[in-house]
Length: 380
Image 1 (cartoon, rainbow, N blue to C red):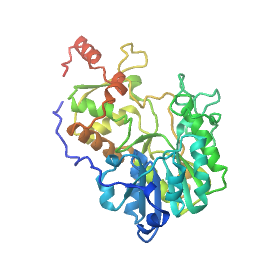
Image 2: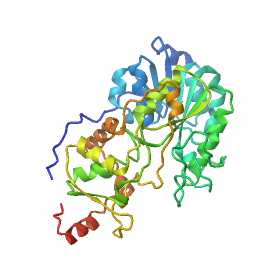
Image 3: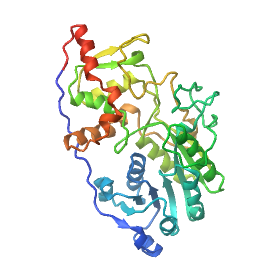
Image 4: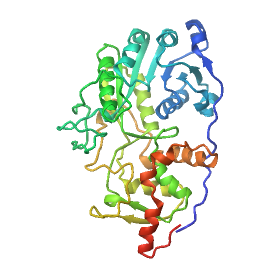
C-alpha cells in the first residue's frame, strides 16, 4: 500500500456579502440585475443550488441566491457575480418582492411540503420556467415500500418517471423517514397542478460540494486516516444510483431553455456500484488499500456503505436526454467536487461535528482491526 499523497484540491470557498431582501423594493432588486436572463435560486447555498448557480453564471445569467446564512456562499460564486439575498423561505411577502419583479428561471431547492408549494403559486405568472428539486424518495414499489422504508423496495430497473409514488401527505412532517417522500409528492402535485411551466426534477443520491450527508466521506475519511483496507459488504455490488450536482445543474439549464410542465429523473449517465465508487475515490486521492469483498453470508457485520442497495436502485434518465440535456460526466469524472470539498474541510477543521454520528456505523475501525488481526494483516 502506498502512502497517501496529499493532493491539492484548492481552498474551501469563503462567503462574501449579504443583502436582506426584506429591505428592498422590487425596483431595487431588478435594478441591480445585469442585462439578460435572471435566475432566482431558493436554497442557493446547498449542494444543488450552488451547482445550478455555477452553471448559470458561466452561461451569462444573472443569479440571485436565496438563503439564510451568507457564510455558506462559496466565494467563487460571488466572484462570478452571484448576489446573496437573506430571505426566509416561509416569508411570503419577501418572496413576493423577490420573485414579483419577474424571473426567467426559478429554482426551488427548499420545497418540501404542499404548503411550501402553495406559497409560490401567486408569483409563478412572473416566471418563465420553474424547477422544483425533488427526490427519488417519492417512488414506491408495488408493496408501497420506498427508499426510506425499513424493508428495501423492489423497484423495476431502471425506474421511470411514471413509476408509482407514495400517497401525498398534506402534513409538514418532511423530516421523518415516512414523511419525507410523501410530503414531496404533495408539493409536486400542487405545483404541477398550477398550470405553470413547472419541471419537477427527481434526483437520486447527490454528490458535490456542499452536500449535508456526503456518502463519499465514508471513503475519504479512511484515506485521511490512512486505513490499510476497505471492506465492502455483498462484494461491493450494491447500487444506489448517484447524481452529480453538476449533472442536475446541466439539466436545469436545459429546462430553462425549453419550459414546460413535466417530471424528469436526474442521475449520472453511469450507475456505479460500491466497489467502483470506492476505487474512483481512491484513484482520485492517489491512495492504495487492500480490498476485502465480503460475501453475502459474511457474519462480520463489516462493509456497510451508503450505496449498498439490493436490488439495485437505478433511475431511467432517457426523458432528460430526449429533452436535449447533455451530462457533464460520469461519477468518476464528476466526484472530484465532493472529494475536494471534504478533503479541504478536514484540512481547515470545517468537518461538521455531526459527521461522527452520521457515519459511525460505516467506520468501525476497532471491528476492522480485529478482523485484520485474525488474518494476520497489519492494521493502521
